[in-house]
Length: 283
Image (cartoon, rainbow, N blue to C red; front, side, top):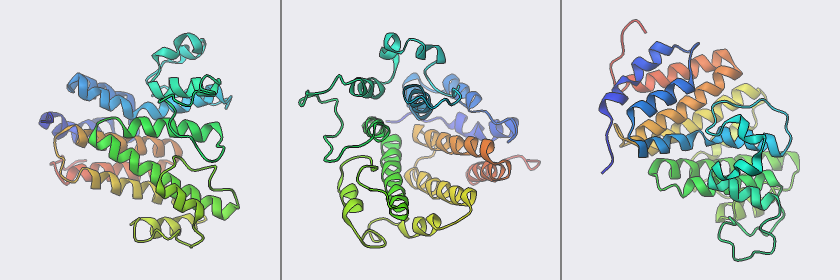
């Protein structure tokens, strides 16, 4: 039976109020979770921060010259001697690194290989295949469902954008599932998936928007709705906490990108909590 965290979840609104949107900190949220969660549940929390490790790792091996993201789980100094420290990285990064360096060539029976793709994909796409396979196999209900949705959502959006720009879709999609095959082959405006994918019509409309910030905001709101859907019947367990943290990561990104939209998303996160818990009137 899943552990429940009535006190922690009931205190999240106060934690947000104390931080305010200007001082919002993922680092502080993460520290709170570490202090209050069972170690096994906190490991699930750390998985949500792997996206920052992904950014740092890809920045290093693909020479993107971007600033190191401190919200990652792996410290910056490990990259100075990557070969020496690679064993400290998550298993999917280790596996991709071996693939990237050519260590898996000719090893057809290697179970660490995620897909034997019919088309040649660039390393960035292959990396995503390793990552999503890892997350979807986490064994945690929320994480596996969220990242399964996110992979498919990203694939649909990628297919829409590739079609608009005349780019070969097959080389850009993550995975080899039936959805990928349909997105690759279909000539229909909705890829013949309107009935199967409830958000598709909205996503097609959003993709036509010219305002980049508004488009990104609408995309994140679609994701936000899915987060709520996954944890509809989860109130005090780790799944509810993970859902909150995914929203917090979205809010954090917007606070850095656009102060106004970030503030709106922050308020939305608080309002979501207000539906379940009483907040001080002065907020």
